[in-house]
Image (cartoon, rainbow, N blue to C red; front, side, top):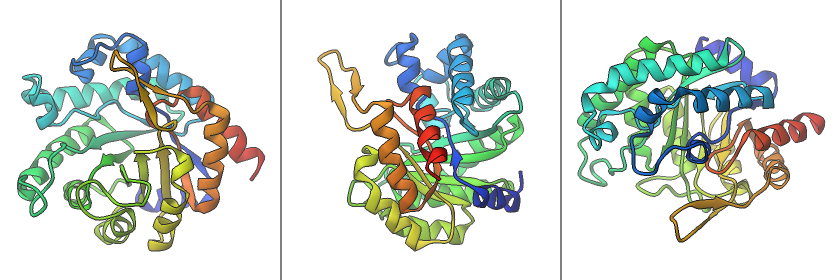
Length: 293
């Protein structure tokens, strides 16, 4: 899909993304503390089943499970030299699940380190890290890129610059924002929308962070700041952390979808879910969005 085709596709009507991957795989047996990407490659069935369930629920974009498949994150498990084979293989799993019925996005995320001058991570080093992963995802056959759960505008810039140095596929960029729209490292959602549009992003918005009930003004400010499609992919509310360390998200599909309708009215055109959401959340979202359009 070209960038022009993507823009036209988004302009036709609201589009549905998928929901959470990690929280669902934890329920399917993913142990805490292991490399999720390696576990998925050893246990592909739960991932494929989950993504097929999202397709049945109405998702039109599936995120490949490459969230932590960059050199820094894989290096925490001694797997830093497996960036290329991991990304290629994980994309192929999602392409198998999609079966041509949805777009497959290469998922890229934060390293968890603020970038200079807001932290100690050199911009050039981060640019190389993202370019390595983006090239592997491109070779794996992604249809577009989803840069998500970013903590600051500067790291978003590095990711977009890295991808744009390789190709002209569509790029969605979403940040984990506070309820006032500020990023955790540097900048804000509004600032990101302006800067990233100029750098060549094709959609911008918010994911993870808080629930949809706290993001209406944030989505509205992003909508007013740029001409790009706006993404809303929040958690199923704020979690309760059990004594076991498990995060429990209490917002049920009906409540989630009703709050998401308000985000659509505020300007979001690409809608999905993050932590705590399930295929049932996406199904309920589809019903609300398309029965009330």
